[in-house]
Image (cartoon, rainbow, N blue to C red; front, side):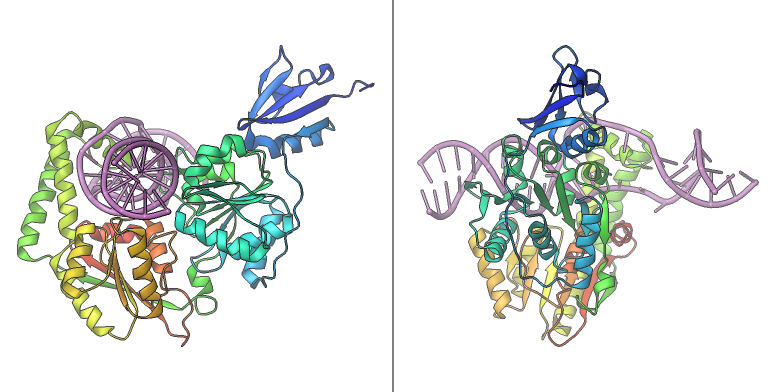
Length: 456
DNA sequence: TTGACTCAACATCCTTTGCTACAA
DNA sequence: TTGTAGGTTTCCATGTTGAGTCA
């Protein structure tokens, strides 16, 4: 450079962007977003996710940049998908937001289709990150069919990188620092997972300027969605199941059924709950916030009474969640819906097996092997089975055949879990019929609060 | 290649009375 | 004056998953 205008070189190095300045750029380093400067060597380093910001800042200041960060070449990708109106709007909103941000769309609304359209529109090497092997296989099939080229896979025993690659969160976490310069776009499926302490590193170590997050439920109770906003972008488009019901998703009803504890269960529940509340009263923990709960957990490590209280609470939870009259109510529901396709959800593995034995229902829990699981879901799909009972396994990331009746026998207070379970019955019905979700709640127990919480 | 196993990571786990600080 | 949002961060238990190891 013959004149005194500043000049900067950017390179990718193990999950970071290295910034090298010439003398004329002295003083610039410290003012760049995310950069930790070493003034003596005129170099600095920023986490790779700051790359897009860095580029924009340097461009705004008319700094000459030798950009060597991305080792990517443009790709020509085309798709035949005809987007629905809300999918077109979602894509447009994302592009308008600078090709960063999250789409919050219900299960079954075709989030994948929007992502494929985004990939085709940008035409850059793309990494798709997914939470389960099941989703890894689904995306791989979909992308291979759509774009024709071989698709890379990271996870499930495969470690093959291609310009279009699908990875599990776990594999992406293990490989992100050496793959960070290979992709111009990264798609995070079920992006709420990115809030986990470890997984968020994936987004930090990748330089990809374009970022797309997909989820049905963005907000996290621990507030970690704010970190996701920093790393991927805010929610730029949102649709609730109610918005699409009747048109692109099945119309649905939610029916709450209250049951009571048997006298024996009530006695046991009150005794266990009493052990818990007595300890709270005597220990000065008032349970006004989540931090009080953590305090209790902390104490239970050293204080036997705290441990006893926590265990009692756990047992009380089991009593209310697995109440005998829920099982009787389920018998009536199954009887009423002989002609329907029913999925039963519970919070406890034990109950799944009890129900499986009593009603001769095929059961799926985390103990069910991949092969057996495929077989059960296959039979449910082709109609040989019309009922399935599952613990928490079918909530997300599994291609579950459509049903029209869901029974939530027990569940957590998680809004996400509830939304995902509801999503299992929302595929539009051939006869235009409505979907129905039963929610069984034990009266006069903490479950009333749990149920209220998950409904938002 | 398959299955059985271990390990690590992640998520939920809690409350309903009235405290404190601050915004409208 | 009235209304409302915030408070907090370690490891009791159960459930689930992916990765890695070994036979």
